[in-house]
Amino acid sequence: MLAVACDNSIQVQDARRGDADAWDALFRRYQLPLYAYVYEWVRQEQTTLDIIQETFINAVRHIGRLEDDGKFGSWLFSIAHQKCIQQWRQSGRQPAMLEIADADGEGPFREDDSPADLLIRREQEEAFMKLLSQLPVPQRSALILHFLEDFSLEEIAEITGAQLGTVKSRLHYAKKALRKLLQEEVE
Image (cartoon, rainbow, N blue to C red):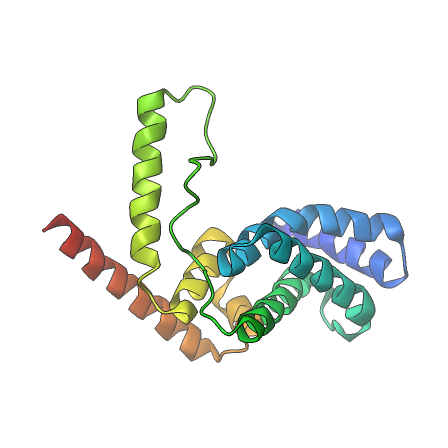
């Protein structure tokens, strides 16, 4: 993890100097995690791609404002987070974040999975996503950033613009609500 952070810092320094190869490396490093995060908010392919493009355009424009090169990832996610909120407000509807997975059944799989394994995992994912969709958006967002994107609580606070205590509270209540929903599901 430390080697990745050092490598990132060097790339960020090079990107700040206008090195196109450094920007390309940063884009390749963050495009998929950003795509996954943004898509969970908007659930529209083209809008997701537009937001990612706008996020990187803003990053290029404002890289000089980044004070700690080691926090490039959380800074980039905070830009994307704000873009998602803008999109949500402009559309006048609730974000689609964490709705049930698409109906075509595509998703990650391993080559050695049997059809039964794939079906079971898909059913479990859909059930979990259905439970998550019942949580308030701030709690869902905190869960995704912490458990799926592996951001620290401090980084989540930076990304979402919330206080650290608020992030802790959102995670606590989200986990508590998920436990309750799972219990209700079993009963």
